[in-house]
Length: 286
Image 1 (cartoon, helix red, strand yellow):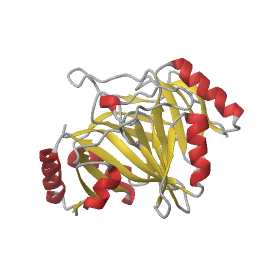
Image 2 (cartoon, rainbow, N blue to C red):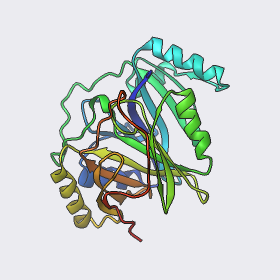
Image 3 (cartoon, rainbow, N blue to C red):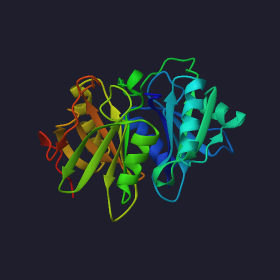
Image 4 (cartoon, one colour):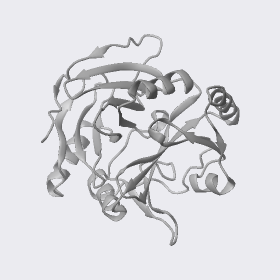
């Protein structure tokens, strides 16, 4: 696997200030404000990386950039060749763009749903230790930021691109009454990206922030009550990735999943299956 992990995501939102406050007081991310005149309004930290998410102002909320970390420049060359052979236009990141992302090298192209997709290597780590304003410990490391789930009517096209061109594995699928999900992974995390078939609209379904313990999940659930955050789905446990989690609505309209104890995959023994229900919970909230 050439792609190692989900490195970062850009988020567009009508109210970056409200999203930054939500990130700080509900999720527990550290927030650093952008510079005057800069398009990025806020950068969000969850570990030793300089940021894992950033916020820009947009008419509608959702993921605008997905950045995948690769091993080294040779891996970028390999992926660039593979993309071009598949008919994808690939552009080298400028020196200014690489500086903004705090990476040594980066290329970008239009991925599924028209989202700018970046491949990078040589991430510069932050000089200061990450400290969550709420004392939250996030699970990242070799598993990366977490995962992002996207809605699209062209789900098979998106799955084929990530599996056949970018080299992701299809971990499994889930056929629920509200939609069919396709889960794709690139490291021991069960999935780093997933797509749900949606005939009504296209965009971001949710982003996972995994925390270290079930108690942290419970404390986050308490904070949704304290800050009057609307739930998307109740507390529950997934059958496929084992995640003990709940879903809440972010100020940009898409969901944030807070979860713990997700399974880690052993590529040599993993068997892909189709699930039709969770173990318990995760009931949609009207």
